[in-house]
Length: 102
Length: 110
Length: 136
Image 1: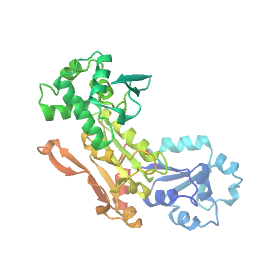
Image 2: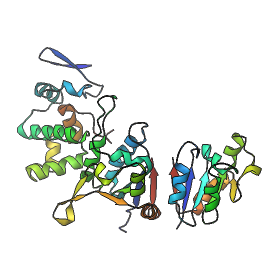
Image 3: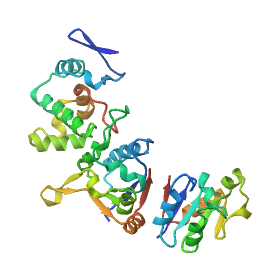
Image 4: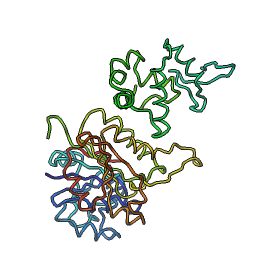
């Protein structure tokens, strides 16, 4: 039993990503979408929090939202995987439930 | 759109729910009831008063099943049952009684 | 689990008046109660502010919906989980929250508190135990 979490707010304006990470269980996945994708870049103030959990929790980021914001996939944190819309659907199907962190 | 009570005008929406909850009075309730073709009895008043008290305490009009459960507890199963409530208020106890009680349409009613 | 009954968790993470989320969540809970599911509410992060005592909205021109939480028992919604860490981070304790009671049908209508304070780890477990999670 596992959960797909989605985070759609920038980690620099809300606690959503942090709160999500604090409540996610090992084996869960966290997908960053919309402004949530700012949490996927390397070298930021939240990078260490994400990096610390990457492994126990799988991190994904929605590629079209990254591209829209001018973030190249080469700037992603190690352990964060970019997916397209089909990948989003596949993740939703793989997990038992979805939980949005707004 | 408005009701006329003792020479006063009270605005209501297209379904007959009054716009300003503070405009309510017992006389207005009688006027709305008449328009709904309801003759107000003690049992009607018990329901209307219950709704007003409930709204005052919780800031919502209760759903029908909540209303009936509460009336049953307060006034017994002869009055607090689905059939009797619909006899009192043929177009729906929550919907019609709320209108007479001067409350907004219950949450979840369409 | 009874046939067709699913576990629904409504997750509240927003303060009451700055956005419409909290009021919308409460309305969905009230409407959804008609479907007789196994409903719980979770309050964490700024969501814990929804349950504080003494709210008075007279001066801001919006409805004070905090009394409506006390009606939830009538709708058979009587599991309100509040995260202890979220309270502590905001300088709150259980005493700052309003009392919300329900009558237990299976225990001669005894009045019992609906609010249960749980840890962050317990909140994570609670979320993991649901069929459906609705976020606000």
